[in-house]
Length: 109
Image (cartoon, rainbow, N blue to C red; front, top):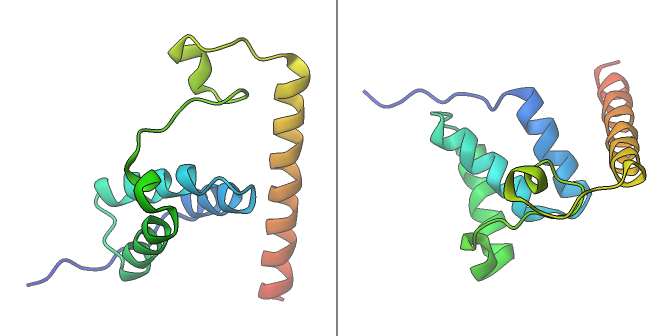
């Protein structure tokens, strides 16, 4: 018997989509890979991973680097982030969340 296909959690999918829309394909790929490592078995997920790996080329396999504004900075001993940078990043996420919510309500109507 084969492994049943499982859908990617909608919250993870939304997070990956937000990263893609921000142009951060490496972080989206990381989300998809983590979902796969947690046991999500979906042909759509495998296809997304393959597409991003092909698009990114060798960079797809390079370790992720912390960026200003990421939570990883504090843990990695990176540069401190100003409150303005944090607020700007959060406002960008909020805009994307609102847009995705609107798209979902229009699509579901």
